Length: 309
Ligand SMILES: [Zn+2]
Image 1 (cartoon, protein in one colour):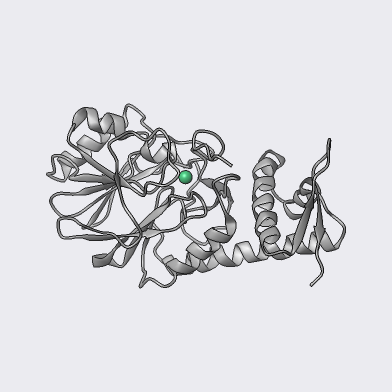
Image 2 (cartoon, helix red, strand yellow; image 1 turned 90 degrees about the vertical axis):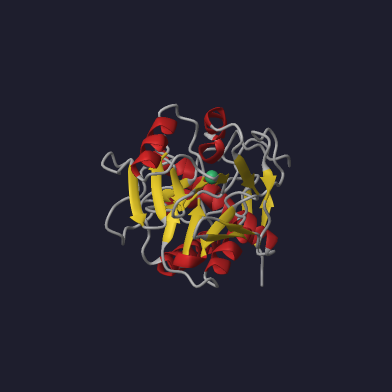
């Protein structure tokens, strides 16, 4: 199927609210600061695109000591560039040295055009994969590529699942990870149908646990101090959902709406469409594992069959 990054999931990283262990929710919090300096190597400027699907908006990060690398660019909100320039000036900086993008969704690369109008020679890089309509020129980055900045080293880590072209960036000097939409502050991640893939996503999460990791800087929501703790939580959460889906099937709830009704009984109904997408991503994974089979119906939701063994 031809993926279309402008439709489903295009600016929809946030899934369902996650039970909170951290101090501050990553939801649509008006008190979320527009700029912040979470460490001497990392500054943060908000993309100013708040919403149900983006929480307080997309975080963009400036990484370095004197000549900072910008990770992600927000959605292209006009007020973002002045805010970025104000923050650069506060830090005694004039411009980003270059831009790294985590993935192709519009709330991450939508700001490239404005940035290029301001700095026409700005280098922009991402993993080029199944892309159409990128704001060219864009340089290709691959898994393991190392980007040297001013006092910082960023390593690209291919982490498909939320998007097939997704890169996280590992900051060696701080044992910190910029996770884009793979791990978020305050909610789970959407696995969009089409370009998303839950099996890939689980493999990506497990891969992150192999890194010597402390902090996570997510693309939405606050800094996560215990990075590995949250990645473990994400894995546990998905495994729990998978168990619930298998149990529902065993109990004769064989359509997605029926499963959602039981499994998400405590979630407001307006979020059930999103929940259905999540259940479907699980069923597609189980289908690939040959544990379920889909029976398509003409005028009704598919019926899912639990396979023996
Ligand atoms: Zn995304």
